[in-house]
Image 1 (tube, one colour):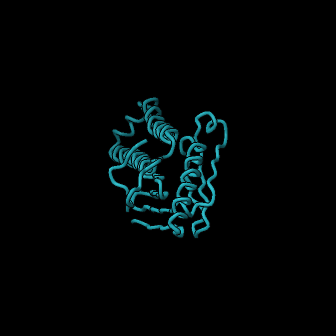
Image 2 (cartoon, one colour):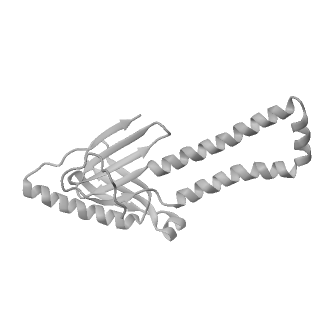
Image 3 (cartoon, helix red, strand yellow):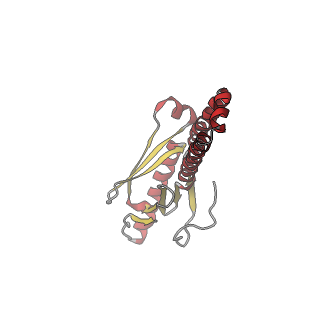
Length: 193
């Protein structure tokens, strides 16, 4: 289990039970796409090197090929950077009192939601296909009665185990709150731009 130095709006006696990101296969797919879009044009340029050197030697064609090539490779790098940022900053934290869902959408838009465990009605794990079955990753849906409806943990490792942990924590939190006579809180969402 990874521990956090700072938990947003940490409550007294609150402890992190699960800290999750998407499965590493998302990085493999990103790396594969980046490799193809980078090395395929380079290998085509190498194969047609004689023609390319003629174009580059031309007074107007050379700068044009250079600008187009630079724009293409900068776009590939930017796309890879944005996708990695989205992967790295999408996090799901389950504590002994709540679930915190942080989703990055592009470079400058982030949505953070939190849900008290006592408001959870159901948790469902979903594993689809051969690859997800072999690598044991998939989705977990946490259902509530609130406005948002459900939280979606996308492509996380061991979804069945995560579902069981969430269900166990929900039962423990409901017992703890019923002993105090408390009412479950609703989902809180904030958008950070």
